[in-house]
Picture 1: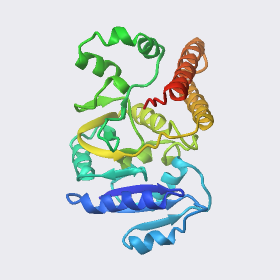
Picture 2 (picture 1 turned 135 degrees about the vertical axis):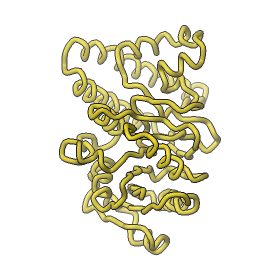
Picture 3 (picture 1 turned 45 degrees about the vertical axis):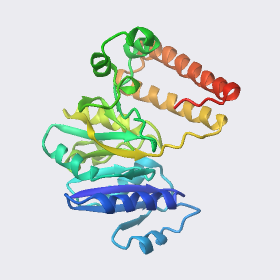
Picture 4 (picture 1 turned 180 degrees about the horizontal axis):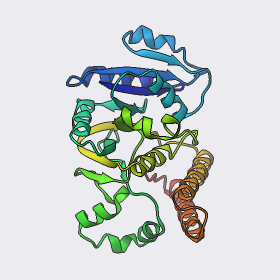
Length: 293
């Protein structure tokens, strides 16, 4: 059985659309839907039971963030497979069954992700490599990388260099749709997903911890899931989110390498690059009203 964990925080309509799509399209595997309401001040969680009486509703006493909310949902699950599914995703086919079948074919598979797309069909970067000094420098040399054959460039870098058009092992997959066996949790510290991040970068950390246990993470290109991923955020909030993201990346770098020369060189390159990109995007938006995804 697949236990589908969905977190709601003030997104009643979006969450309803997500749940409805799971019910409509999931046919080939048994499943349960566990909805965790993270103490939404604007939503009445009992309204979900009126719309979907067959789901399990878990009411968190507080908003502990994405990781804590998912762990709470997992505590109420009974499946041998866990799917963490963002409330802003919409299925358009039986993606859950296809992912579960692929997961069951390989006992060494850790986290599995699928092809996430925007509503207009544009592919999102949901199969990724861990950040490193090498990859940051290569990213800065993007014009030269684009001279390489596509397949070689994509397999080496993934991320935005990858069109999502073939199945591949990867370092980590997006937490918007991340599937794994329940048995992995018993091997993790505390027998649960790491909760050190309130939000952002937890998927990367979890995938690294799965790889520490000897598992391989996988990207399944064969089934698309719509991920709304609202990018229309005010510049001031974008900057706050970016700083949070940089902070979390450095915590992950410390986790992997420790605070040594590698950590500080990476921090200088990565921070300068990301801040430069932020101000370029801000300039393009202000002057030309051109938004980069």
